[in-house]
Length: 176
Image 1 (cartoon, helix red, strand yellow):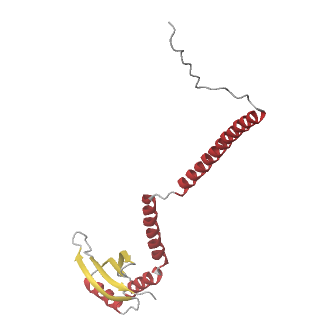
Image 2 (tube, helix red, strand yellow):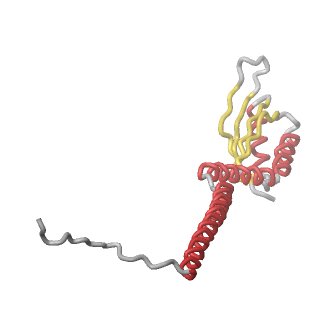
């Protein structure tokens, strides 16, 4: 049987011998890849450090809206306290005390409630009788610090054997 010869196909071809230039290029390429890998690792570590410092800075500078709201409320409250402490109450109290002494000290002041925001003062006191209370209110009407002192209420304390008159008055006050 002699037939056509078998075909032999060699796809790989003949290999060229390795040259020194090729080996040198291979070594340079491998070394460049290793250098790039280490440079990448170094830059990645530096980036992680910067991100960590940034996160810490953001955490320190982070503003809590609830805390800011509480701080604003405290600031407003502190401002009100400063205004009240800065108000010259001694002149007002001296005027009330002076009016009490002018009425032969028959007036006992039980409470003085100033309202700095509205410039009002509410006074509660006791006297032996109603004419002395009216004299006290009349004396306060001549005051330069108080405007429109008015008797808001009065009552005779019948459970007390001396039957004193408890009264409440209010007035606008002016700063000297």
